Length: 396
Image 1 (cartoon, rainbow, N blue to C red):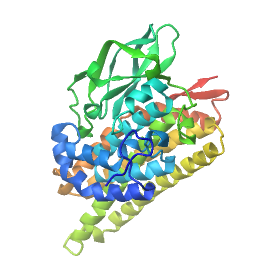
Image 2 (cartoon, rainbow, N blue to C red; image 1 turned 120 degrees about the vertical axis):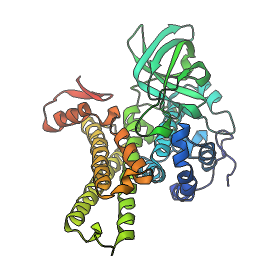
Image 3 (cartoon, rainbow, N blue to C red; image 1 turned 135 degrees about the vertical axis):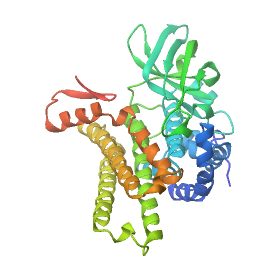
Image 4 (cartoon, one colour; image 1 turned 90 degrees about the horizontal axis):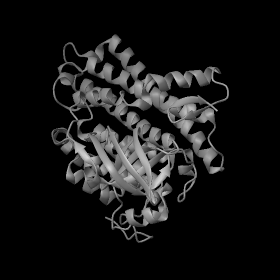
């Protein structure tokens, strides 16, 4: 199934383009679905799913080509992540979280770090959290990192952790990559949805991180890779969340359509209800409108970065708005599907699981009310001479 890596590092890369990757995602769907319920109990992805991701090269979708990755464009990433999330929401979430962290490390960390991280026969899995940062104290050739982080999605599968930290001496926000065994994991992921993401808390105390294993959290100047990485950390993270929401919303509507079709002709079937038909049309339109905005925004970003142009404030506003809109459009779809699915949605199964996963996804900070309000301020012209700093608009 795999071929030799052109660089001699990373996964043994499979020949092919994004079409091939999408075909692999479709072929993998029965495997993902067969483990979806069990994964919730495990609190992590099944070993067979992780192995399949390695074999397909999925952990390298955001990794520079020179390191054995695929370095997909934003629109290609959206399509692949939506396809995997369609099969299972938790699985798609872990994929975008880990592949994104690995891609950032490959593009921005120093040469010594990359030589170590990407030296094996397979791409590394890196997972962790950049928000609620820890503290990095300058120490020798690097930093002493301490902190407590939440929501380490996929960390149980990772060999390395991706951690936000504020340098004590300067106040600079950095991303620091450290070996996962240095982290103490806390088994506290007792949640309503996205149970299989294993997004547990973790902590570190006085862990030495060499400077090569760090990057500025605000840099848009990659050391490796092309235009994809010049958009910066938050846009790259937003891209993953957006693809996830598109795939989850589509699966929910398709499940309801199949359920209704199965019951067509039976007495009392909702398929003959004008109210249901109108509501279904509205839900379909809302999801498709969200998708259209996503591809409009990210298509423009692709064009700009390909020309070597930096994102401006409005670009950053719109990509955040596209994510917020898609997340809450998918939540509205989930409410509609649950309402009309009857006892099917009440019982354990695909509809119930995706309903719970959707509502867990809405609680992520990237789709929170503060981001939506900041988007509105910028769009209405109430924030002149402001710029985006992570998820907030601040005066320059």
